[in-house]
Image 1 (tube, rainbow, N blue to C red):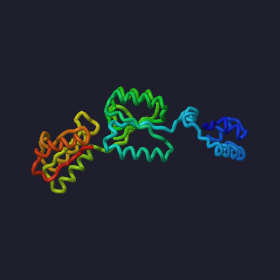
Image 2 (cartoon, helix red, strand yellow):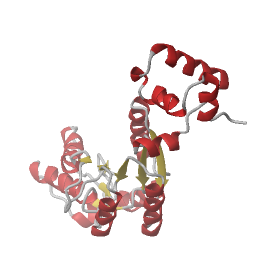
Image 3 (cartoon, helix red, strand yellow):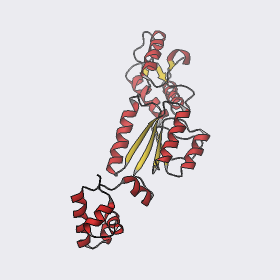
Image 4 (cartoon, rainbow, N blue to C red):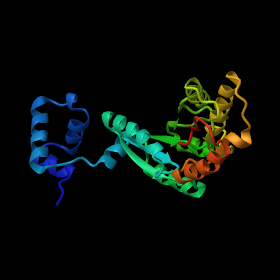
Length: 249
């Protein structure tokens, strides 16, 4: 059977509270007593219960992450960065794939709340009023990744999409291309897709390149197959071009 804290206390001939103190604040315990407890822990191969320790200290060293589409390769690098930093700080991640489905997102938030996470990372989707209300109910820190709120004051980590769209287009222009197309996200996405398109159009205006929106822009939904289909629609319209800009995530 798995050893518990009572077994450690009995073997070390100390109280349960002393074992707890050694585990959580060893500098407050006499060296001789610490040695006895650590020896008992090693002999019994005892591992503290993370959930129990979390309840005591009101911290679980766990962060929740909400991803709208785990099959999208865009999130691989983001998750890698989250995992690397969490590991460095001795935290664990609970990943929830919402599949761009609001009921599923709400259910995920309920589960994360029950898990007593210490913080939440919310990625990519716009922040609607009911989402913000739920964030407030969690009463934990919330950070947005690859998105930001246009309405609520929530910390966020995100690139400047307008500038990114401008610089990507400018790169093609400076390399001699004039007939340039763009595969954009849905115009229902004001956080990412709209700023990227604005940057694209700003670059064309800056370099005095005329472009018809209906001809040079096709929309998708950030999936590989959407980009493939949009490219099929785009190429016939800009046939003879010397460059095509794809801003599909």
